[in-house]
Image 1 (cartoon, rainbow, N blue to C red):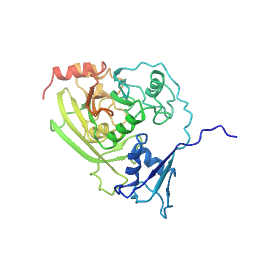
Image 2 (cartoon, rainbow, N blue to C red; image 1 turned 135 degrees about the vertical axis):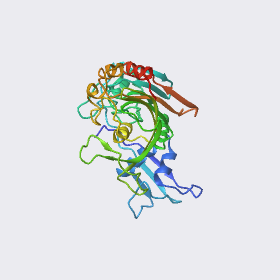
Image 3 (cartoon, rainbow, N blue to C red; image 1 turned 30 degrees about the vertical axis):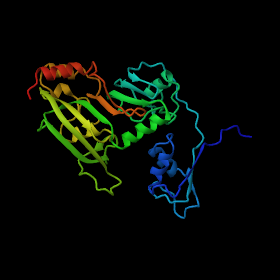
Length: 334
């Protein structure tokens, strides 16, 4: 006889008083344990059924109807092979619901191909073994930063916080500000880029934003929106504040590169060789010492998942970027 634990099951009835809405929206509201994105995944994987049986394939977008009984069967939990590692973490804040960390540059957020250990997830497993929600390889994680990007991240400690934060990110209810150091001087001190966002057709490592914003029914191209404010310029380098309104992969990096201003030391988007592109100056001296792309997630704001209070956390400019920031602001020619 198998000793495996049977899958967890949820059963929800649609009463005559229930508002008619999309299936994924209805199911995600029935339990604090499942976010809408998680419900969509379960539907796509055949884990959702209905009585009376549907004559059509069950899809996240289908509308519920009075008298239906919906059943969600969660697949058995898979044993995690995530190795706890006693890696240093910079904790900006923690309570029983969330942890806010200042991720170091060069730290991968979660294990992946070629990076099974040494990640933020490994460190979280060691320092906070109570976190048992989310993907087994991504305990508590609701968003990510690129390996070389430093800065503030929030981690959920329980199912309710995970769901609320996941929905907030999905609905663009998060405040995100970055500091970026890029080549050249944008034509305007303040500008906004609202574009399409699609993986590059020739270089699969990068994304293309030289696209018009997608039509509503375009499932291939995503919408990307970033606001920029140039805070300083000196010796061929700009210090730029970037506010993200969407959270596409490489969004700031691709937007600036496609706008003609790649981020310093960004190997994928053409930001290498600062010694050949910056005139002899303190800015150049600071730039050539960089060992990663000059991008930092400085501010993260959101409503606390339990209290609903507005939270705002700031990760100060890291030590490796401080000399560059100082050199630009000291010689600022805006």
